[in-house]
Image (cartoon, rainbow, N blue to C red; front, side, top):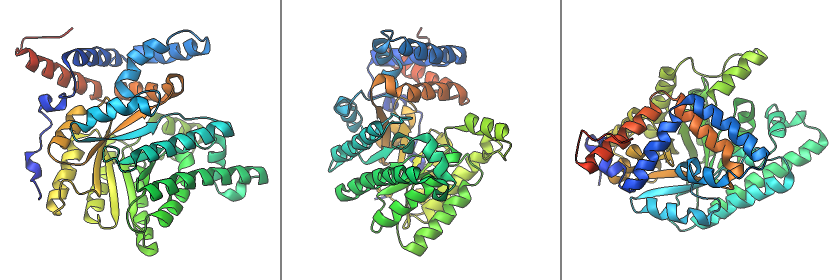
Length: 401
């Protein structure tokens, strides 16, 4: 049965924070207050690098603060509590082994094995609808960059190493196919992405004949990605496979712009956020109209785009619980979107990163920096938390410290 999207609202903080106790809500308020200070975040980034380099005992402090907000634990089994907590509110978990930038073969193979373990844990578990991996977790960045320009540019030794990378990718996707667990392949920097797109296309053609098992990730802050989506769709039609897409706005804007200036090539990033938003919503419109061929996940913390997709689903007669369309947000952010969507009957999942504290610090610091750089992000989180604390106290005059 199709429920009309006009009933959807993100204003209900009682639903948004139903999973948090008064103590947890107070703690989240204090954390976002700290994150709201860009200078403090930058200082904290430098401080943690020095502390870990000097082997200072800061792991416990990190685990009790930013790690607690944005991660599920250090191991897969540590995430069981978070999986169960989210499942109570019909929100799925995407286990994300958030270790990246490894260089040694043993480390890269270990990451592959961790990703396969998340797929095995997800098999038959409706509370874990997807697996995910980051290509720089299973490939040296320098090799990925060199392969991006074409395998003909690799030495014989590098070609052998690149084949090991492709073998890791195939092992992960094959596991997903055999266990019926869809796999997201995350997007990376533009100077890596062509190589990633090529092997992802190969995996989709191989494993997506009947349903979407392999999903590519498209970052819409790039000027060429809407056209890329349409070309990918055409390829899926010609080769008769289901196109799997995770749609996001993007995560590497400053780095992309700086590199373009430094190396004197055209900036691949949209001129402004409004243009990114237009392309993001145009992509939603295109995929919804072609949902028989494109299965997709909208990874967004944007309220307008979220409502826009629910309206598109209604216009196209697509049920809220149609498994071809999912919404996703990061753990610790935008609960007002995730919980209200799930409460309204939509398919929703949270990215739940995990891994050893030291190794996931790059991810955690990006989350903190992202919250300070995205206009209104921290202010929105804080305002919602304060509103819910006021509601629980039964007083509009109550102002938490």
